[in-house]
Length: 360
Image (cartoon, rainbow, N blue to C red):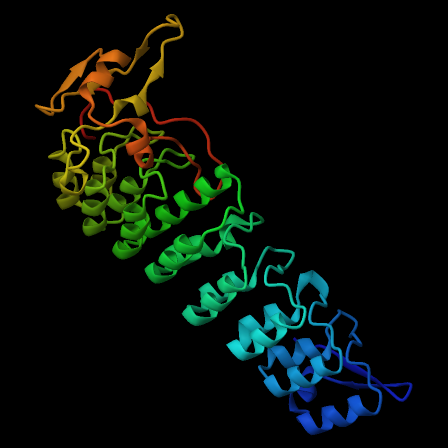
């Protein structure tokens, strides 16, 4: 796109196209500024000399314009500014000088694009680290499709997820945070990013048994896409193998539908999920699955429970029975409490308790 760039010089507009602006050397720019050119003069759509030089990654020109009081925080049409352009096209030095001179690290376009999102999309670890160090928001809350955590998970950037989780700030309400982290785990599971899924589960920052608006869990989406190692990993951390989506299909059913018989056969072996990495929890805490009986205010019916000794299911357990047969409380198993979160959306509902059922 050709964008007009204007400098007010001696009462006249010295106008050049975007292409010509990029060819202006620093000495010419310095001469124009020294003669009184306005560094903050805007084109018709709000572009300034600083924005154009930032887009071109011309550090010397950016530094010169800032010395002459160019506004690093100026926004053009659609919320575009020098920092967003620099993140997209330039290097860390250009970004750093803009941040030190008034650019907002949490600036965003009308579509919700932030510098941190762009840095993650570019897969620039050091750039991401610098923006996070400067206070970039991990939960912008404007457009979940453009969330940096979800984007890093989609690309399988486990090192970025580690960084984000280590530096996460209390900057989002719990509902937004839960939705974002679930969606990130869902994307990593969908794409079979084993290491990224492992980070989320190892740090216990996300509910492994959440489901989206159509009832699909991370285990289901990994099974559907044939990612057997990721399926095994999810199972090892307590993924609920009996969960059904809104159409009544389990993870094994999704595997069968998509021709992944090996995964279906593996899932069929799990009567219930007590696996190596869950050994410290010898019994799944069914208090997380309690369903209130509307006709009885004093008792809570689970539908089934599990014995910590035998690992077998028993029907019709009450809440008191559940507490006696489980060895750990809800506080220890909170990361696997089944709830329902919508994929790239808000949370809603709960996963029903397990019932006797066929695998598909």
